[in-house]
Amino acid sequence: MSGMNDEQAGTENAADASWAASDEEQYRAVSAETESEELRKEVDGLRQALASHPVIDMARGIVMATAACTPEQAWQLLVDVSQHSNVKLREVARHIVDSVNGPPPPPAVRTALRAAIAALHGSTG
Image (cartoon, rainbow, N blue to C red; front, side):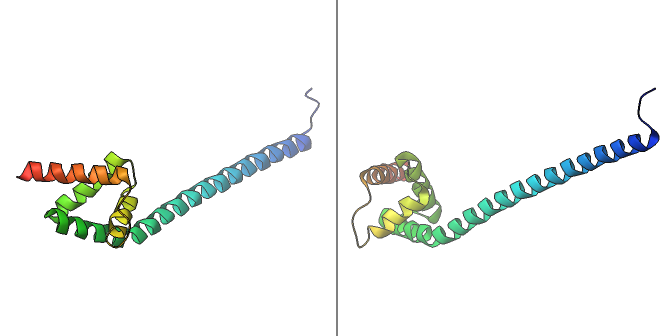
C-alpha cells in the first residue's frame, strides 16, 4: 500500500502542475524583462548615434577641407584617429568641430590626427 488514495494523488499531481506552470510563468517574465532591457539598450545606442551623427558629419567636412581628401578618406581618417588615440569617434569629431573656434583637440587626438593626415598624403602623393 502506498498510503495515498486517488484523491490525494490527484491533489499532488495538481500541485506539481501548478508549480510547473508557475516556473514557466517566471521563466517567461524573466525572458521578457531581459529582452526589454536589451531593446532599451539598443534604443539608447540608436539615439546616441543619431545625436552624434551631425557632429561627425561636420568633422568629416572639416577634415575634407583641411586634408584635401574625399568623404571616404575623411571617414577613414576619423576612424584611424579614434583607434590610435583610444578616443571614441564621436568624441574625436566633437574635439575637431570645437577646435574651429575654441581650444585645440587633446594631445592624443592631435598626434593621431597629424599621423593620419601624413599617412593619407604619403599614400596618395
